[in-house]
Amino acid sequence: MTSDPDDALTWEGDDAASDRAAALPKGWNAVGKGSGSEARAGTAENASPREAAPLSTPMLVAVGVIGGVYLLYTVGWVVGGLRLKPLTTLIVADAMFVPWFLLAVAAPALWFVTCWLLTRGRASWMRMLVLLLGAVLLVPWPFVTVGVIGA
Image (tube, rainbow, N blue to C red; front, side, top):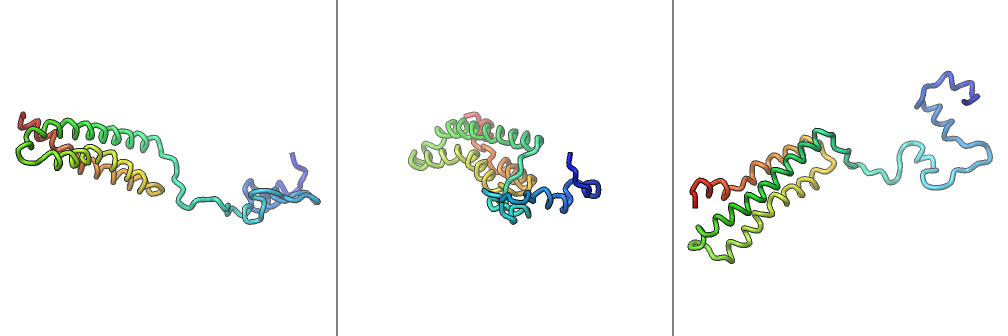
């Protein structure tokens, strides 16, 4: 309990109250990080302007579900690409097939990581839009089409 008579005239967070709280008793000096007047004014030196806020629970669940879809897409590219290989033996050589097959298998993971890094600090709807765009673009077509052909 303080004995300052002006406490009854101020609200918590009022500028006058924060100046009094930041002031030290006579004869004391503030020392160390954040002891300057600019730190009391609210402009800390190490504050990042694009610091990412934590994800909300629905956004965290949505990112997890889309991440699971990308994991299934990776499995689909592996299964579909391996089932497609006997059909392409006569058309393309292994030297042409294998690098593109590996890139197709890695594409969902690369899209997810790239989206995560490039949309850091941006709006949640923008991250979700880019993730959903990847889910549409990265459909494992060999898995879908070879299943129809029945090879």
